[in-house]
Length: 221
Image: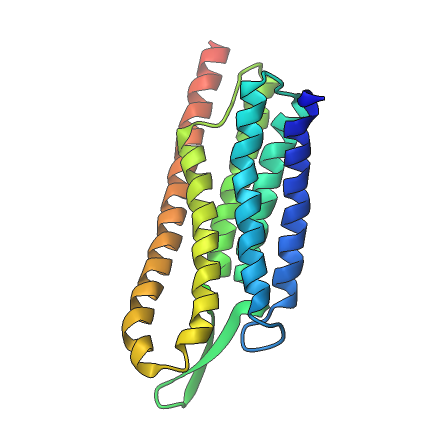
């Protein structure tokens, strides 16, 4: 019975991810959906992220690692992360601002996430997946290293920071004095987390490329 507990936790994380996406799909900044949806989304995402550490810990502790866990666990992780950033760069979080005295208007995301950023994160995942498949087809083990784990942690924390930022923005907007001060710091913190996540994402991809080249060289000769 105990052998199935980590796998059940992994499966529950996939269910939580789907619930999280439904909540985000119903919410629209300055549109439909009450801010309570973001509150629920935050805690659902927090629970889902927490289970990522629990299932792996239990599987190692009880020595019940399985093929199911090795395949589905990283799959669910990437679904949760990539899906979150896709939503953050989507229409539900787009606002329109006036510039140059109102003569021009520009659309941008209140989350600070752009489609280009999503492409970078997605490209990294596709690259690493391809390299892993190439290495393992040659009989070389290609597990996650510490840079990949750091990347996952940063991505997860950044998702929570963005959710908290968008939720809090609804309360600071009615107060211009608060906007000029506190909101500026929170926006800077949000942007720093996003860019730090992108930098680590690219850096970890470079590390995996080097690791793949070294492994293949050793295999071939």
